[in-house]
Length: 197
Image 1 (spheres, rainbow, N blue to C red):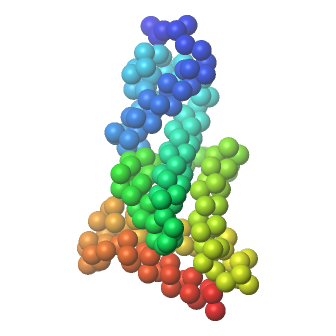
Image 2 (image 1 turned 90 degrees about the horizontal axis):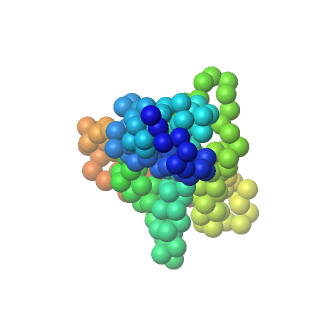
Image 3 (image 1 turned 60 degrees about the horizontal axis):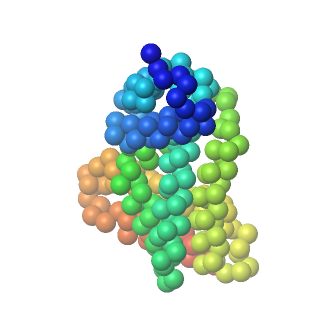
């Protein structure tokens, strides 16, 4: 029987998300178990879903914590850089994905049911990270092309993501690419140069 009165609802929420995040990092999304999360914290699966609402809401909360940590990682790396901040941002993307492989891939493996929108708080977390990238790209574009920063940032994020994904799943090794990070940076600088004309 779970310890139903040992913790407040807020404490329970924090415990569930923290243990879920730890377990997801260890097992990956395909082997993630909300029931195991409940077991590890000493409560029933019913308590987990009573506090979080559903398995989908649990995953959103766990992935939301990953997004927070990703943003923190990116900001920390950029705070120490004054020269080539765009290169540092791309490097930070690769670093976070490699160091947190299961958590990073879970951001893309998890899907809400067809037709269901991501909640506002989650979309805001994604916008916050994207806005950092937009701001960095805006600083290297000519002022006359500042309006191109947002759409360019979205495309370049997709480019960097693809390079990172191919790195993690071994595709680049098969293709003979020996420095995916520098290849991603080269594609980004090419796109910025073309957008600056």
